[in-house]
Amino acid sequence: MKIKTWDNLFLIVRWLIAAIFIFAGITKILNPENFARDIDNYRMLPYLLVTIMAIILPWLEILCGIFLIIGKWEKGAAFMLLILTMMFLIAMSSAIFRGLDITCGCFAMTAEGTKVGMTRLIQDSILFGIILIINLREEK
Amino acid sequence: MKKKKLNLAIKEAMLILVIAVVLGMVVNLFHPNHVQIATRRPSLKFAPDTMLAQDLPGVSFSSDQEAEDEKNEQITEPMLITTEQVLQLIAGEMALLLDARSKAEFEKSHIPGAQNVPYPNLSLYQARLDSLPDDQWLVCYCDGPPCQQAESLAAELIKSGHGLVAVYFDGLNGWKASGQEIEGKEAAKIEN
Image 1 (tube, rainbow over the protein chains, first blue to last red):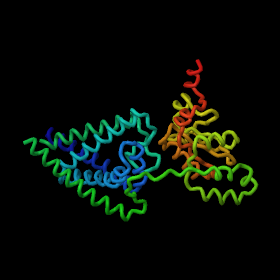
Image 2: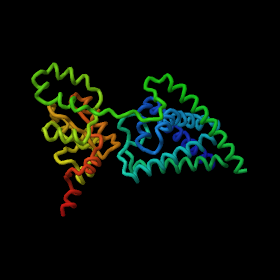
Image 3: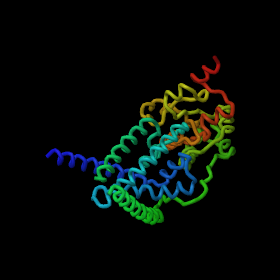
Image 4: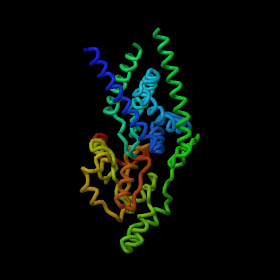
């Protein structure tokens, strides 16, 4: 019974994470220019890669979210989300270290977005931790 | 066994990546605000000096409300201006500088004479926003470059009907680098 409760809780957490990424992906697809500008503001990638990432990354988030929910290719989806979140953490830490006054590009729904800072870094670290747990459980 | 599962995860992740690439490229082709794949950044549009000079307060505005309304309609995005242009506007008393950073950052250092309107908390500064003049350039800045707070504040000002809105592209970093004076705790520390 206890195992079942944990399984259900785990499933809910997995769906929540999936929903967050689907929502994030949709907002970016609706405003691809904003998102490209957000990525570019990190000043980490050549512009060609910025544009390619702005086109592909939202779909990666949405597809990973969908696959996590429907339970197909969930190992690959969880693994991909782990890599993405790690990339976000590195980019954000680098921006904070360089003192950049930019928005994070996490949800590109509005031009203002959310400013990169310690709060956003902690939020993303928690997200990374949860996705890591999902990955470890998928290993079992 | 674990290695096998990791290989499977990588394989699945690669498949997801391929689908994302195809979907992304196809949708982007038909998207009204599509991203243009390019190797070079689009060049920034700075306001020409003549544009700033044409818009001198009292010359084309205040006397003719219709002309002002027409002009306001034409401005849809904030103009970028340089340090030299900011200095010119200040010298001619044609600009009000708006610092879009947080209160703490503003108190630490800001351009002399600037007012603080922290972008994410605009609703808290409604009274200040309501009292902004219409016959002066509202020059928004933050740390910069890049600086989205100032651009977002400028866009908001244009949306609320202000016609003379500009973004000081180099921001406070550029201001300091060009050797201009600053106000605030940081300046007081340097003086001491």
